[in-house]
Amino acid sequence: MAQTQQLGPATAKPASASDVQKAAALRRMKNIALGLLVFMAVVFCVAFALQEHYPWLAYVRAAAEGGMVGALADWFAVTALFKHPMGIKIPHTAIIPNRKDEIGSSLAEFVETNFLSEDVVSAKLASTQIAQKLGGWLSKPESAERVASEGAAAIRGAMAVLKDDDVQDVIEAMVRKHVLEPPWGPPVGRLAERIFADGHHHALVDLLVDRSTTWIRANHNTISGLVSDRSPSWVPQFVDGLVGDKIYTEIYKFAVAVRDNPDHEVRRKLDEYLKDLAQELQHDPAMIAKAESIKAQVLGDPEVRELAGRTWETLKSALNDAVEDPNSELRVKFVGAVQEFGQRLVSDAELGAKANKWISDAAAYLVGTYKHEITSLITDTVERWDAEETSQKIELQVGKDLQFIRINGTVVGSLAGLAIFTVATLVFG
Image (cartoon, one colour):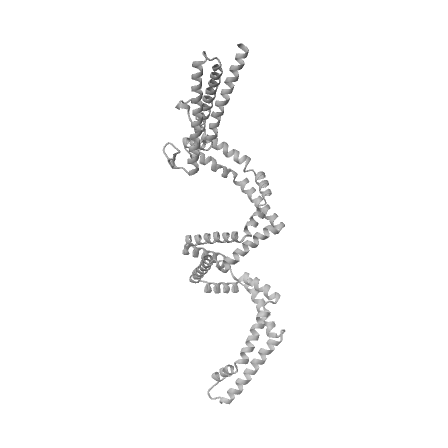
């Protein structure tokens, strides 16, 4: 059997296995309908020739005559849908090729009116409990693994398509827009003001003071040595030692006092300084300008470009490692999160109801907003089809069933012809 089917006057397209089977079934039904017509014609001829010798054959002739009429009438009706019978351009024949675009428009309108209705979609989705079914599927380990595998494939594809320079340009542009362009002073000042007002900085001050006290206690020789190194050469060495010890002792006592006294003057002065600094960062133009200068020094053009490159390389490397390793921490956690979410959709009635409502509303919105665009796919597709191709496509789908009309017409015509002749004979003799 040929594996191609002529679908248009100038285009031969490969036929699917299903189309090949449908074409064979269509030919078989056409042959059966034609064979039945030929059989009726033979019976008619024999009965017509012998009815004078065998009067009862008149009833057979009438039945065969009615069967031929029914068969021919239904053949004409079925054929007229798809082509001009015997190539004769009789009006109102070849209906599908001639009215292809109107059929497509009518079909699109039918689908839009009866299927793409917000009420129909919402009611159907509300009755199907999609969230619970989805949750049951996601809660299965193999389903969660499949979601993770599909996500990994999508990430690999994205990594293959994306160019490093383009991604770095995007990251750099985002850093410049959201980090560099806005002034740092006011937002940093507002954040610092809240921190200092709530006293959150005291823990950091305590840590610094404690570490400083510990360092001073452990570095007696270092502090004394600084005094000796900076004293005049004519000062006796024992004097340097006494002065160094005294300075060390006083510094240590001062550090301990600051450490042990939460209300020490140094701490109060530091609080006042920090609060003033927070205000200046928000309202003092000179301090704001200084903050901008520091920002420019820290994050100049080379630094920003390097930051964008490092960020992308780190993210890319982490994602590639995670998707390539089925036992990676990221993938294991993702699979667990998918399963947990699926279980919650099933067990948490409130969450399931919210998810169903969201799905229903989203589907209704999409249908209400884009139903014309969706159904235009039908109209546009049919309009692009060749008229003969369209006729053949439709005949391939429904032609087998339409041949039963011819067969039924033959049978019904025979019965009608027999009934009419019988009644006429009984009435008129």
